[in-house]
Image 1 (cartoon, rainbow, N blue to C red):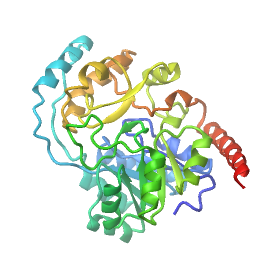
Image 2: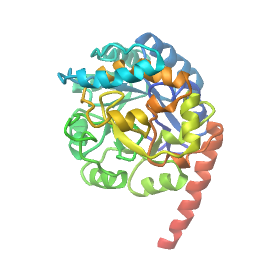
Image 3: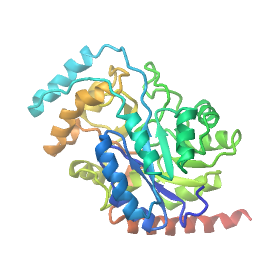
Image 4: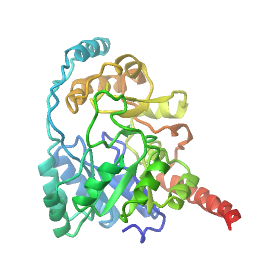
Length: 349
């Protein structure tokens, strides 16, 4: 599936703004592949972005969909009260903590109608019938997995590839089920360990994701059995990325640790540590997407004010090593580093 890539690098579908059609197009032009993020977009907006991305890539791109989960019955009152202080600080009102399905059925219809060549799913596996619809439209299916059990389910549903997400990854963990008693939502598998575990139980192509910012990382996961490497954080500072200015500054300063939190969205996600992550994470309930909607006005106001302390600063563990510049220059750097790493492997012969 990924054998025809000139350089086996995939730009990750970073929802909320960073992954733009321009970024996907630039990475494709440089010999890679990209996923357009459908999460949080209206179906109408996604429709336009699919058409734009198809024009920029000659139709060689993917789309990532969020699989809706069940409605949480967790009590949000205490978290709302704590978040209210942040809303007052920025002079905004909290959002309504509603549950929704992210317009999943309509977005699924779109990827089928546009005959998107590769559709990936996060937060769960599509049904076998949904996989069949995509196959009948000429597309392939990839599913983000974080443990062996999820990989087994995705394979049973008919997935054509697995995106193997290690705990090092920035942003939301792709967990099918979020354990509210575990700060990380479930067992934390490192990327290399998970690649080896899944490689021993499936013949499906594996796409490695999580903390990959250097060409040597790409060489390492290919050596561990991956067919391609998916990078997100490595492109956050790219010229073509839609990353906001406040987050760009925080990334460039590289002075913060990263940690998991549910405080912003109700699902475990890795981001740079700031005031809200430090103060509100411990008791944040597992209630996605209710907390996402509740905190959205606060996050937007903080970003507009240039204050990183109340934003969801999603980033992988190795974010201090990410570089700025055009996507083409980042891809060129990754190629050079990967070739150097491959040359060092000659000592194993």
